[in-house]
Image 1 (tube, one colour):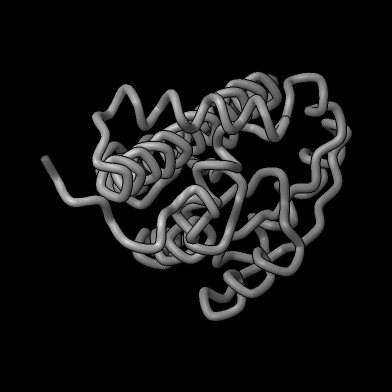
Image 2 (cartoon, one colour):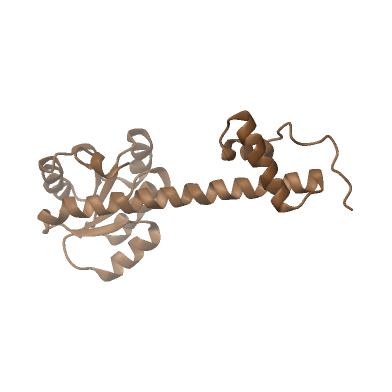
Length: 197
């Protein structure tokens, strides 16, 4: 999600207290966003998150910090969106535990004028996180492909990478796509590994 796409977000709000959900929803709507789900039960929030695919989730600390932490756990496991903890009072112990569970930020329910800025910052950091995660994944696939080519062709790492680059250019394919194909058993592989010299 790019920064300019934060004008109208699909927001999931979760809290064990209905009165808190009723307070948060109008604020989110006033910011120009759509509340796509309001969840109270931990058992339901994962499925709702997977089905609705929100842009961001706001989880309020209700009566029980364990309930809120369980909500965060389920949303983080199911979501491709960042989670922001909403606090009605300072609670550093809860924030510390929530950060271990995967929240990207926390905001105070009373600081309504800061909500949008906090959401914007969170979405930027989440996008950066996803880019890094993708880069690490692509790097791992490329490294595996080079290892396979090194073993099968009895060549060094530089030669394996050169082989990938040349084939990528010849086939007009992205290097990562070619590396994935090698890992999955691409035509560059000989039938039998070459004996090492």
